[in-house]
Amino acid sequence: MGLEEYKGVFVFAQQVDNVLDGVAFELLGKGKDLAKDLNTEVTAVLIGSGVKGLADQLAEYGADKVIVVDDPELKDYRTEPYTHALASVINTYKPEIMLVGATAIGRDLGPRVSARVQTGLTADCTVLEIGDFPLNPVPGKEDEQKHNQLLMTRPAFGGNTIATIACPDNRPQMATVRPGVMQKIEPNKGAKANVEEYNPGFTPNNKYVEILNIVKAVKNTENIMEAKILVSGGRGVGSAENFKILQDLADVLGATVSCSRAVVENGWKPVDVQVGQTGKTVRPNVYFAIGISGAIQHVAGMEESDIIIAINKDEDAPIFDVADYGIVGDLNKIVPALTTALKAELG
Image 1 (tube, one colour):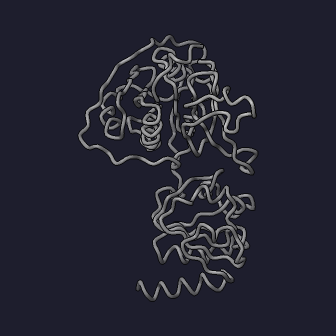
Image 2 (image 1 turned 90 degrees about the vertical axis):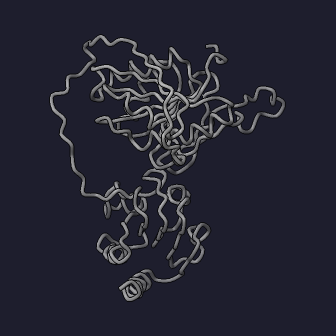
Image 3 (image 1 turned 120 degrees about the horizontal axis):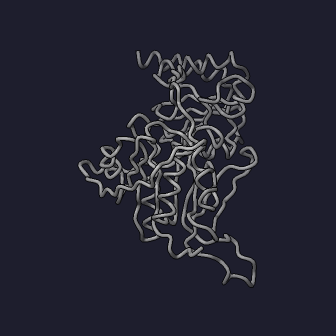
């Protein structure tokens, strides 16, 4: 494989029903950073049917170029035609880096595409940066260290450790990235896309499933990634029933209740509201960490919050290292008192 042939940062711009997924804009933001370090451009790959009109939106969020693969076979997501489309784009345009959102679609699409183009894939990344690999070269073999590699960091072993992975000998370097981890850039309103249309041709075969019906499920769970204020509870809350005092506080503030991994494992809250490496990454204006010790896996999912307020009976809890404000004491007394005071203050 001639690695020098591969240039540019490509982003899979996921869309459903001709609406772009927010993770596409987040990946473009990170793609701009990576491209700057490599002195190259960011290209969005837009796949679907009748989707060309979305290209300008991608340009507003940082795409230097948009490759549009438009075909009736791509109207709804199906594994085989989408895999064929993205793999063909990669084989034709030869990107150095290919980023895909770790959504339900991206987790299905990414591994199949990487296998088809014969490269590696690091899944569920939380940090991406350009650097040298190996990170710590073997003494006497420093000249074997490779530069300008994509260093992909992700949780491993169930979130109990953090691994940094590289793909030095194959291209593209592929990663799926969890929604909410990367930040969108401020959109350049009115930007027009440099569009290049590409169609590899589609011949349905026995791998093309037939979609008989699409039923959209409606979830009652609030999206914690969009919440401005989160009241988050951990193992220290004690029980599912005791989350009521957190809900009371949230109701006063117009906030949303979230939780740590331990809470989900105990069956107290659904995984949809879990914050952390193995849950969701959040950036609210205010984050209450109540009864949460502050393990690195949890902190990684909320440390970008504007203001972090921690309540814990253990004064040595790691959560206080990242908190802007900390209260040491019994949450069963502090939280109701705080709720009462805020109710009186806010009317």
